[in-house]
Image (cartoon, rainbow over all chains, first blue to last red; front, side, top):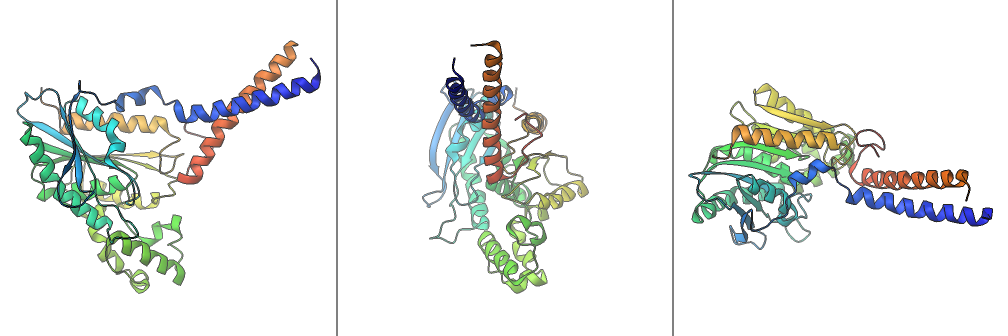
Length: 321
Length: 42
């Protein structure tokens, strides 16, 4: 074969191999992950979709109830979707919720009104919507014959933040006991010195203005650069700072964060960890040392996190035999 | 084709797959944060 033709074949092989490499990165998942992603079917149970819990277009939840309806009581696992508080939908977590239902739990995905340019929704208003939704979810489950005796809150990213707010801030008002919480990469604190990923730690007028704008939107409150400077903004951010509500009665928690997170600051996790530790809460914090917001480079850590979630569910909200 | 050329083709394929996977990792790291090496193999 002539050299020129061979070089041409090499180039072609390289391009095909490059494409294979790219495709396999998206398509091939670790074998253990399949366990936690179950395709929904009538064999698992019944799915009730888009049940309203209040008047807004987004105020709907999906309820997954297991096929076996003979038990006296059931644990409810709520999983709240990700999306930066501005996007996302409960259907994105269908496979995870299906897995939870297949274990024998009643499971629910709850939508909340997303922040857009045309509304003034905030993390605070979204957390209040979730708080309003929970009693309706329980009521709907009981209407179908599934008595709920405990609840596990969970979520990812924005959903993780909202899950923590319900579990730590609102648990005392929950109609049924909150048994545990699991979440990944959700923000729980808003110290500007931690939010360097957005340049909010710079101690400049520009940085304080940016922090005031971002935190005003997130908190649903009016924060000024002066408040950022004198630290008084922290009081106004308390209603959405989940870590501030942790006390000795807070629920067992399983958490996962990536140290290179570009979306929500890993630096802030220390407040959460310290609060859990100082209050003697049973918690496990998994740290993905090579990953960012998607925990995308640490499959081993993700596996350990999910196995611990299962372990904690079995311990704190076991399925009735 | 000679054995030597088959080996070269094999190495080119391996390089292509490696770079393809690394490119995706680099892209996701750009969006989400993360390291190019360590943790998952490629």
